[in-house]
Amino acid sequence: IANVVMGQSPKSEFYNKENKGLPFHQGVGSYGVRFVEDNIYCTSVTRVARPNSILFSVRAPVGRLNITKNKIIIGRGLAAMTHRNGCQSFLYYMLKERFFKDDIIGNGAIFASISKDELLNLDFIIPQDELVYRYNEITQKIDENIKSLDSQIRHLTEARDRLLPKLMSDIPRVGVETAFAPQITALEKYDEPHTGAVHRAKALYGVNSARHTLWWKVRLITSRCCSRDNLL
Image (cartoon, rainbow, N blue to C red; front, top):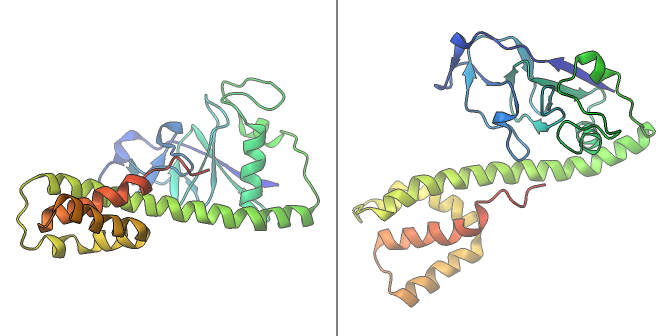
C-alpha cells in the first residue's frame, strides 16, 4: 500500500550548516514532536524524500515516525514512505498504531534494524478503500491544522528569541516599535486576548516606555503560545 525509499548517506565532506543544498537527515536525532528539524544540509543528492513523506527509522530505535515539510535527503538510518493512493494520514496512523513503542512491533518482536524486504513484508489489516478514503479525509484536515500550528509556533519562538534579549538590554526608545513591528504584529494577531493584557499590565505597573511596552507584549503573548506540548 506504500512506496518506500531507503536512505543512503552521502560522504560527510558534503555536509554543511550554511543552508547549502537540501536538508539532510539520517536518523532520529533530528526528529521533532512530529516534523523533522532541519539543521544539517548536504550538496550531494543520494536518496530523496518528498514533502509530506513519512520518515521511518530503520535502525534502533526502529519504528520512530516523523514527517517532512519539504524535500530532504535521507541517510541510511531512515526510510521515506508515501501511500500509493495519497492517503498519507491513514498510513501515518496505521504505522503509529503498529510501532507503538521504540524497537517493538505490535506482535512483540524486537528489531535492532529492519531491511526494506522485512518492512515490505509486514502484514497489516487494511479496510476497504472507501473506508480508508473517508478516514483519511477526516484526519488529513486535523493533520493540516497541526502543521499550520507548528509553523506558527516556530515563527513565534523565533520572534521571542530575537526580541527578549534586546528588550532586556538598554535598547533606545527611538525606532523600537518600527524595528520589530512585523514580529509584534504577528504576535498580536496570534493571540488577541493577551493584547488586552498588555494594557492592563501597563496601567497596573505604570509601564510607559516603548521598550517596556514591547517587552510586555512579547512576554505576555508568548507565555502561552510558544509551546509544542499540545500538538498531537
